[in-house]
Length: 220
Ligand SMILES: [Zn+2]
Image (cartoon, rainbow, N blue to C red; front, side, top):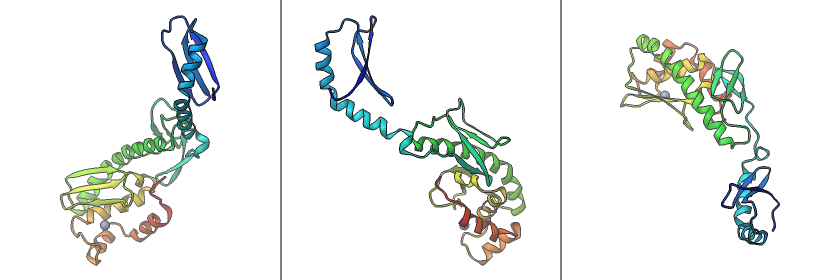
């Protein structure tokens, strides 16, 4: 046998099973099982166990650096793992997620972006009516999700979309993206007429543009 294991015998058990855990292999078997039969059966499972062990090792935290901090509204928040429910605590600057640190980094990122989406949606629902009325712009549907290459967009069909990752930016930068996208209701191209509209409702837009370019990265 080329793997070590812990044998757990049980009077109630009728079948044999192997579990590959991060801290070792456990074999479950009925009490009084024939030792020779068990050895033979385990030998036949060697390659399966080796494959499982590789999978388990790949998901271990030593293979990845955990995300310790994320930016929300331009401020640092600590990521707290293994919580019973995911939420953002603005008072203590913590983001609680359900995944444990042992889980894969992709789970952490996915969960963080889900929370970002909910938070950004709430912020947009509070801000959009104000800017819409101010700018005389309209849209049909609001969509917040993760995009690799853009902060926002307004389609000709009236779909107003924002990148969940935008939540990392300070509120004055998010407001610039709102004004930018709503200005596309009047002018689709990024021409002089477009920037004049943006400047009218967001005089410091150049600063916000620079912030997005220099301080923000889309992927965590
Ligand atoms: Zn644009």
